[in-house]
Length: 329
Image (cartoon, rainbow, N blue to C red):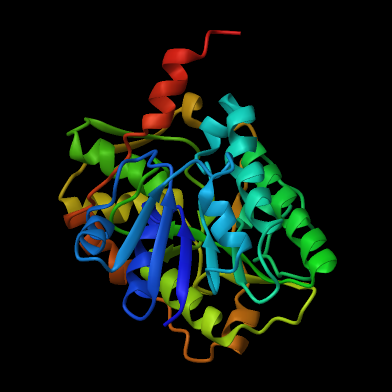
């Protein structure tokens, strides 16, 4: 039985990946618990299927010695600060959380470890078509994307230097039950659940590729088993659906219809981003070549269950602590 370390395993995508790997592998979760604990992962910890290590990966700890000594056959690195407004407001915290945490791991993994780095499709420069791994230009538009691109560069450096084999994942917009950040779906569901008289959003025209977290977890588990990577290389793979992207307004209307609400959808200036991508979607040709049986669901297949029972976990302890201790400057 493999021993798999999953960082950020108490988070949104992390929960789905922990559940997938815990069915077949021994799993250790490392998490700072910014959003508390995931009920699903809590249950796995309670029955002994999963070990939880509460830690800040930006600070060296005994866990890093376990990594260096080769205890883990695979590491799925998800832990990071992903909420873009928080990254912009506290860039030093975002850098520690996203870059230093990854550096502390990738600089210590032995050559036989299967290391999966979760990056973001936000590292791509804006385009009017789905992004292709080796063909699309890179150019992050926000600090979050910049930190993730820096981690990709570090991964490449250590892969070449230490003969590592690293899988770099650029996911589309993750969605599903249990969101931990007030991104688009979470924002809509929060407002709908509160009985708001109108739905206040940013720009309504941008289109996104929404992929269910369980489909991401399925793909990651299969890729870790397959491990199509040569020594000294980083292999980047987009994980999206390949289905037609959906606009902000279209998603909002779908959720309102499912919730039985008939309210106005407003574009509010304070919610619009400084630089908005009209399209953010990824080409999945490589992923389908690697996994011919990959069958991600369409939005309409999973959205009713999410609207019915969203189980949002958007209370961020780190954000609260930062607001309390950081003076205006």
